[in-house]
Image (cartoon, rainbow, N blue to C red; front, side):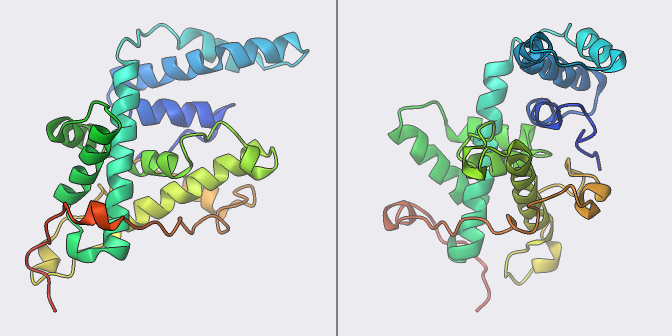
Length: 242
């Protein structure tokens, strides 16, 4: 399974590039690198203007990876956020409303939310986003859990590293759940995992490192539940055992 580029000079920017362009083929990897360079352009300029320095190798890598066109970036943001929100809702269903814990119901909740907010999001496009971003859906779910404001460290006393580590820890909770959880059905052994086992993940040495501050602290996700109004629109899952 591929590991996130946490050895990058800015691991947050590099991880976000992977989230937007998760494919393993050359084109996707080039676009992920191009996004990282684009994302860092202004902060890097401000950093250098303030007297900071970056070694030549890293400067060359950033400069030479920015040539790809990112004309699909807006659609990628929408797809990633939609996939993440669908996984987040599926997680809530499995934890607190198991009688409704189907992907169909998770998609239905996301679709209803889009309608209420007058945003784009048909059932077909939501399903397509879930498929396109399945290898990073746990990361997007953590992004949605963080209030979509990961680049702000205000909730962590201004500690950006702690905020990033909390995000990675939450993503790992979603990934572990998605690869291990199975429905309580008669044909349970035949059920595929909710999330792919070969999805993007943190390196093993990150989990063991002292630098992964906040991992244990932030492994508990918010205890969200769906409202009675939302549940009223869902269909019970068939085949559950007593």
